[in-house]
Length: 282
Ligand code: SF4
Ligand code: SF4
Image 1 (cartoon, rainbow, N blue to C red):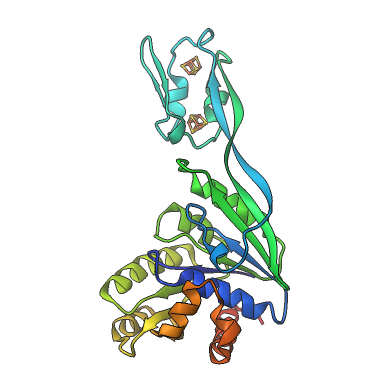
Image 2 (image 1 turned 90 degrees about the vertical axis):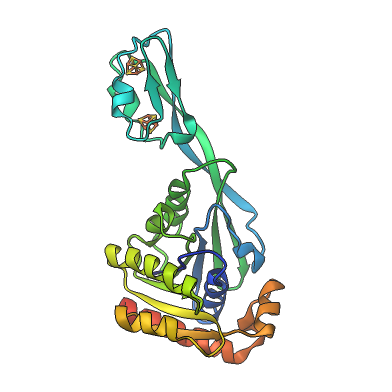
């Protein structure tokens, strides 16, 4: 079972929920916690960063100008605009290349070969008994985060319980993380911005056919703006985390709130039960 903890935007408490949910599950069974927020992974704020790492590579074309006849077939093929061929000029924009390898296949002159280029790495650790942490990390100035996310998720496959900390937003990185998941938890705040971003993110889950529910974070007891929305979209509200100085200080200090607050630990345990039910897993 793969569960995704996501939010329409950053800073809602998504990582807090993912980390504490994994910690509570680990009391009863082994859990893989996957950091798919590869542009800014921050589960290491709660758990020590992994020491063992494996590189994430991509293919990048290398052009042999002595063979190139400037026919333009590679540029016509490239859907990402990474190649521009003019009458006497050839331009390649590596930051736009998605490493599909198609240009090599269509070049009639054998003027293109593919070479490996590092995009980032995946780090592994066992930060506490029962938790396997797998963190995707993309190199600076790279843009192909879906590739790093895919590689990170590959290392989780086959494990019975996987919790993914998704990248914020609603673009390709979220789609890559959500696709094929059994259920999703959206973490949101009871504000107009929170509602707006939740609506966008919930739309993505709907399109992908991933059942979803909501955790309201930093609640001050006036959550109608989110509750109304959830009612209108048939989204269950799984849990409400109060706006509480103790919780904020604990989380900001890199501590798990479930370690020192038994009532929250019980709520996270309930949260897991509700998500399992939503996912149709007993
Ligand atoms: S490998 Fe694919 S994405 Fe990259 S330049 Fe070639 S066709 Fe374009
Ligand atoms: S397809 Fe090959 S020969 Fe044609 S422009 Fe591209 S690199 Fe040159």
